[in-house]
Image (cartoon, rainbow, N blue to C red; front, side, top):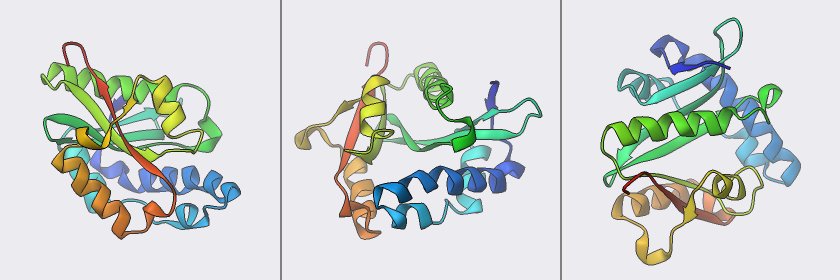
Length: 171
């Protein structure tokens, strides 16, 4: 499926993707994650205007998966990558990660980072297959620590979470 930069007018569609992508968490006893509200429109619009949001689209050019990122501590931090379940298991998440990696490398950034659930199959185990490594506690940067504090404040630490990093060429 084609990839492209997100248009700001597509933010409501990204919210729909996020809601649908959350549903599989319900089967794991994580209804709070399934019920969590997607990022606000203003936040999604900000990422799109900054050129740090990408979508995979269907044949009608409608987004079915997305990734938003922002610079954190000299790396490109993946804030969210979500694939609508109807389009899952087609490599869309990996393609979006590769798109972000290309952007980061072109900008001279040495790595991608993210935070994620440690034990959910489509989270940390998946990202390991995409080349990410779990950061040791001593390697977690101040910006990632701030993100983790925010995640804890909103209750995500109810389930084990990790910070991960994927070095890019030369990083």
